[in-house]
Amino acid sequence: MSGMDLKEILEYLPHRYPFLLLDKVLEVEPGKKIVALKNVTVNEQFFTGHFPHHPVMPGVLIIEALAQASAILSFKTADQKPADKTVSYFVGIDKARFKKPVFPGDQLILESELIRCVHRIWKFSAKAKVDGIVVAEGDLLCTEKAL
Image (cartoon, one colour):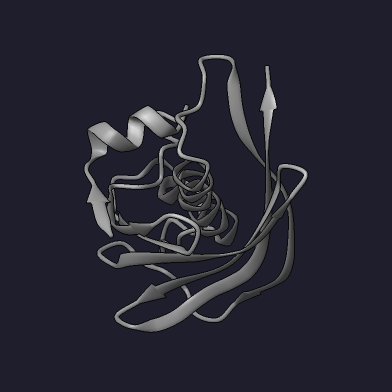
């Protein structure tokens, strides 16, 4: 189990600012799980329009952050880096629940466990936590596609 800094994350994800939603991978255990970190800061673009007088991180972006972490887990599990013309697509979510709002200043811990992979369709059980409390969760489906 090892972590990843931002430079290594960029080798596995095509996302860039402002849509890269991971700051660091704390641990990754190929074939099992990943734990990543997103520092939620007040200067993020979405806070300008998402309740300006009561800024809340959109739930869809929390799920996207979980999908980005899950994509890294799939590539690490397959022991490969994505090719220049390959991308991991988020293709579905089941059992999505949003339990608490996420605010500027929160540190979002993103946990994803690999459930299975069949025909390059990866299924993960994912949770986002703030201060050890689950704020969002769901089962994510991802697949790798050539561009």
